[in-house]
Length: 63
Image (cartoon, rainbow, N blue to C red; front, top):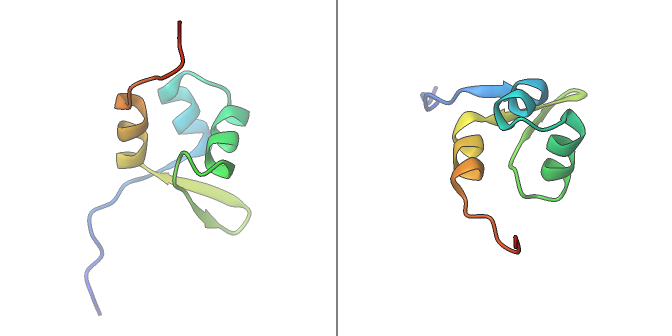
């Protein structure tokens, strides 16, 4: 069996807390394809690396 990479997954609530946004905002980002996620049953898990990339991404259209 192949080894899985060392990936840490976060819940939507954990992502919302880290990004300081609501859970609904995280769901919108996931559904818009702006934040990759894996669906497990009825819940989503977001790779921690994707959250770091999203937070570091420059914001456009502000100002």
